[in-house]
Length: 165
Image 1: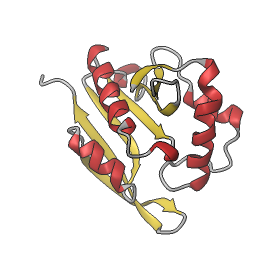
Image 2 (image 1 turned 90 degrees about the vertical axis):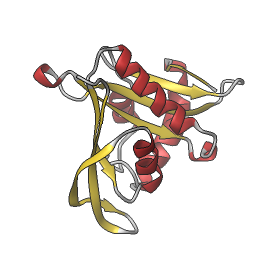
Image 3 (image 1 turned 135 degrees about the horizontal axis):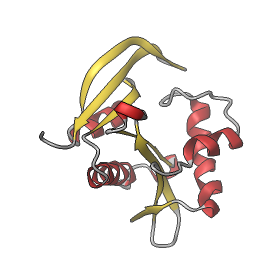
């Protein structure tokens, strides 16, 4: 598996699984009726952000991540990231590889921490992955996420320090 910057030519592959994941409404607090233009504008990041893909040797896009500063100005030293893996390719390690890549990128860019603003507590696979990479749950907003089958569930704010000082 190779992780590299996403190209405009890969957008259709990203959108094919992004559309499916967003429409399901189980993991991201995005508008489930998001159209392709909105998705592209939101997902493909310009500097100082970055959008990457995880691809197999044959070029098949397994997943994608976008990363960059969580906020601007005095908060620009804290990074954030989002990850989507094509459900047809779950279990191949793309989520972990993308997450590790985002952390390495943030460290290399001088960010002091990475924060995830909205991780549905029902997304137990993602929560377990992030915890295994050093993230902690700072707070949970009770009933902050409306899951389509589980109802109102908590919404975690997760944090990982990237440097010791």
